[in-house]
Image (tube, rainbow, N blue to C red; front, side, top):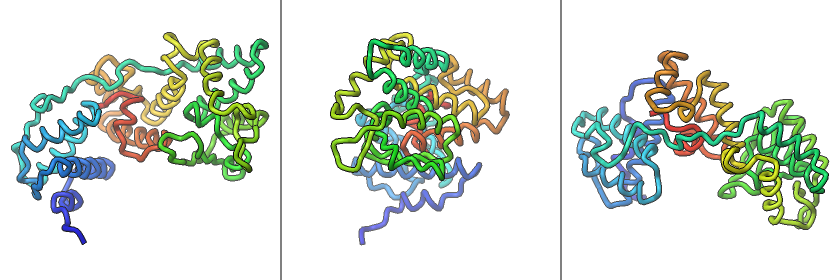
Length: 319
C-alpha cells in the first residue's frame, strides 16, 4: 500500500460549519486543491502549514490547464475554510494576491434562446417544403430543447431501446461528451410527447440492432445539415445566442429559475447585483437554493454534482 496523504485525510475529518451541502462542497474542492498541489511536488502534510506560496502554485497550475478564475476562486474558498479549521489564518483573503480576478461573472453574456424564438423556428421548420428533412430536424431540435440534449445526442438517440416508457426514463448513451452515458428520470408529459413525435423518424443505424434519428446511411454528415436548418430558421447566429447550444443554456436557465425562485447570475449586470436580488427574494436561504439548482443542472448536463465550472458556464458565477 502507498503512503497515506495526511493533507487529504484531514479534509475528511475537519470540523466545518454550515449546511451539509456546503460542507460536502468544501471537502470536495479541498481534495481537488490537494491533488493539484501534489502535481507540482509539494509534500506539505498539514493545513496549518500551508502558505500563500502553495496557493499561488495551485492557481498557476489550474490556469495552465485552462481553468477560469471563477473556478479557481471556488477552490481557494474551500481551501481557506480548511486552513481556518486547522488554525491557519496566514492565507491572504484577497484573490488578487494570486492574480485571480473576482467580481465578474463567468460567461456574463447570457446565451439563452428565448422560448418564443424556439417555437417560431420549429413552426417555420415544420412548414419548410423546400427541405425534405425539415420535419426530422424539427423533432431533433425539439428534443434538444425539451430534454437538454446536445446536438449529437439528439441525433443519435436509440428510442426503441433506450426510452423506457413504463418508468418514464431515457438512457442517453450515444454521442455523449466524453462517451459518458447518463439516464434522464421522471420525464414530464411534455418531454415524452416530444419523444413520441420523434419516433416517426427512427432509422436503422449502420450497427446491427441500433437505431437513431438520422436519415439512413447519412452518418455524421447529418449534423451539418441540422446546423444548416437551424441557421436558416433563426436558431443559430447573432440573434439566437450563436449556436444550437443556446437551447441548452435556456433550459438550464429555466431549471435554475424554477428551483431557486430567482434569476441566475448571468441575468444580472454584476455578482453583487445578483446576490442582492437573490437575498431580496429568498433571504439567507439563497445559497442553499443556488447550490441545489446547480447540483441538479450539473447532473442533467452529464457531469457530477459539484462541478461548478460547468454550471458557471451556463449560469454565471454566484460569488
